Image (tube, rainbow, N blue to C red; front, side, top):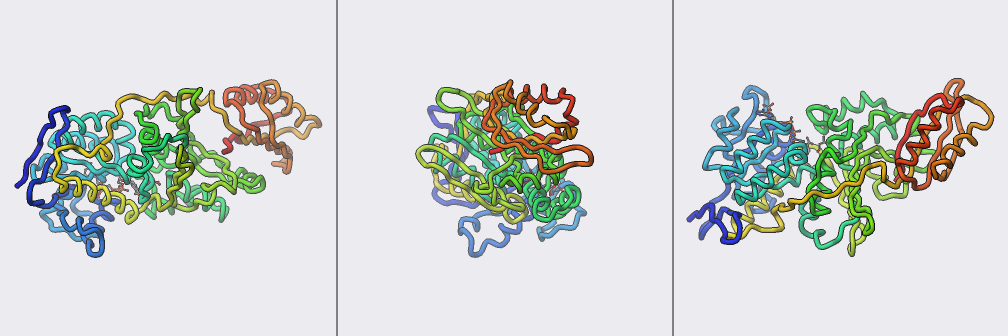
Length: 451
Ligand code: NAP
Ligand code: HSE
C-alpha cells in the first residue's frame, strides 16, 4: 500500500509515506554528462554496495542530445530530451538534477518540488543563488532537497555539518573546495607549468565547469562556501556578500616567493565567525599564502579538504576527491540512499536532520573590517631608503610588518616583498594607496592574504 502526501497537524510539511510494503523508488535523472554518467554506472553496478540501492530504478534520464555517444547503456525508452516530462511524471519519486547551470535547472527543480518529488542535486550554482526559493518550496511541499555532491565532490561534508557536527558551535570553516584551481596551482607549484596548459588538462579530465571561468575566478568556490557557511552557521547567505578573488593573478614569481618564505598558495574558501563581541561572519574566497605546516597545505591536485573548527569538538578535517565522475557519483548516490531510507522508514514526520529550515540571513562583516595578514610584492626603483619609506607608510596606518625581503631584480627594478602581522584590511589598503604614490615605487605587483 502506498499512502502519499500526508499533511502534519502542526505544519504544512508533507511527506510521502510508504506503507506496509516498500515498493521501490523511481529516479528521474536530469543530465547524463560527467556526473550523470558516473551515477548511472554506480547504480547499474549495485552488487557489493548498500542493498537499499537495489530498491532504486533508473526510470527516466533527460539529456540535450540523443545522438551523443554515451559511456553507459540504457534502454532507448528511458532516455529523453523532454526534461519537463520527467519532472511532471507522476511515477517519478526522486528527481536527480545533474545538468548544471541556472536555467532550466532552477525551473525544473521547482516544478519537480511542486509535483511532490524529492530532489538530489549537485548544482551548487543553483543552490547558492536560489536556495531560499528552492528550500521554501520544498518545505512547503514536504519534500527533501539533498545536495551532498554540491560541495567537495565525493567528500561527505554536507550531511556531517547537518547532523554529527550540528551539536557544536562552529567558529570557522576553511576549505579547498575547488578541484580545478587546486589542480592548477599544484601543477604550477610542482612542475612550474603554465596556467593555460594545466587548465586544458583539468577540462579534459572533467574537473572544470562547462565554463571554467566559474572555477578560475573563484565563483564556484564562493557558491560552495556560501552553502557550507549556511549549514555551519545556521542562516542563509546572500551570495553577493561573499567576497571573491580567483587565481588568475597568481604568478610563478609569487609561487616561488611563497616557497622561499615557507608557504604554499591555495585558493581558500573561508567562513569565520568574528567572535562573541563581534556579531557577524566573514565569508570569502581568495588565493592565500598557507603555512607549509597547516593541514590544508598538503592538499594537492584535484583533492579538496574542509577544515571545520568548533566547540567543543576542536578541529575536524574532511579530505577526498573534490571532482570527477566516480567521486561525485558517490555523493549523489549517498543522497539517493538517504531518501530511499527516509521513504522506507514509514513515517509522516520529516526527518529534521535531512531538511534545511533556516529562514534568517547571516550578518556578513565587510572585508574592510577583516583582520588578516598580507603578502605584498613591490617593484621599485633601486634607490637608497626605499624600504624605509615603505615601512613609514605602513606605520602611518598602524600596519606592523613581520618581514621585509629584497632578494631579486626584475630588469632594472628591485623586488621587495613584505609580510605583515594581522592588520585590518581597510588600514592596509589605505597604506597601499599612499605607497602607490611614492616616487620610488614602480608598481605593486601582487597582494595576497596570508593564513
Ligand atoms: P556535464 O558533463 O556538462 O553534463 C551536463 C548534462 O546535462 C549533459 O548530459 C547534458 O546533456 C545535460 N543538459 C545540460 N543542459 C541541458 C538542457 N538544457 N536540456 C537537457 N539536458 C541538458 O556536467 P557535469 O560535470 O556532469 O556537472 C553536472 C552538475 O554537477 C553541475 O551542477 C556541476 O556543477 C556539478 N558537479 C560536477 C562535478 C564534476 O566533477 N564534474 C563535481 C561536483 C558537482 P548532453 O549530454 O546531451 O549534452
Ligand atoms: N568544477 C568543480 C571543481 C567541480 O573543479 O571543483 C566540483 O564541484
